[in-house]
Amino acid sequence: MMKKAFYYLTFFITVCSFAQTKVGTVRFNDVDNFGETELMLNGAGLRDKLYALALYLDFEVDGVEDGVMVAEKDDTMAITIKVTSSLGSDDLKDLIRNGLEVATNGNSYKLEKEIREFIALLPADIKKWDIFRILHTKGGQLSVYKNKTLLGTMKSQEFKTALFKIWLGENPVDYDLKENLLASYEANPVLGKWKMIDKKTGVALSVMQLYMIDNKIFGAIERMLRDSERDDVCYDCTGEDKNKKIEGMVVIKGLRLVGDKYAGGTYTNIRDGKVSECQIWTDAEKRDVLFVKYKGSGGVHEWRRVKESKK
Image (spheres, rainbow, N blue to C red):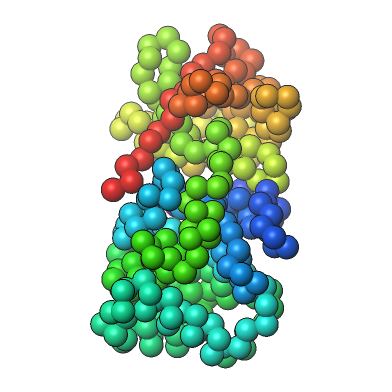
């Protein structure tokens, strides 16, 4: 489970502008917060003139064929619904009920208790441009937000599966929308998790999480791979990083796209605390390799993408 907000909370509270993807007349954050959980946009699309919907995940999918897998998966994920027409509360509830009836092949009556519980969380007053966020976390818990205000929670993996199948199942309410959610979005190739490889020894030292805020790339050390270094702090660092625990440290800061590389920002070497200009880039033929260069690095380093299981 990805809990990036936990690692970067101190850094994120000073930042509120995210890169966005436009869908029709609305925009979705490429990286968004759901309570204390941060997820990446996988895809987004429109449902007639009723609403726009986005799917946020912390794992990779291969396309439309993974829709049922995503719906059934007990892992962190979320959907964001932006209302684009005037809907009464009964209209939204009918959309949910009808969608669940289709998603369960006419067997939604088996989930009547959970359906009532979910519908009870929805507000009586729904306006055009209202935003609803539905976060699923491992164990079957659903958290429902309206305009970032938590409306309530419930717990049922079976209901979560049926709910997500409204848009991702074998018989979705809109096939084009399903395709947009699962197949249309091409993620930035530098984003995600990378193993930092020691150039001399070939040993993986840590796992770095790269993410984007306000069109700039940042990177935090998610985990030190040597157990003996899990609790290390950066004694030699300066400024706000001095004596900070290395796990969770943001060591890549403010890289912008310059030509075909991200540059213009800095890299903090946790071994000696030195801060240097940094460049990172990928190659179309080696998408699972991140090339990293910074002053004093002894050349170009090759970090390896961390591929997480979809199971």
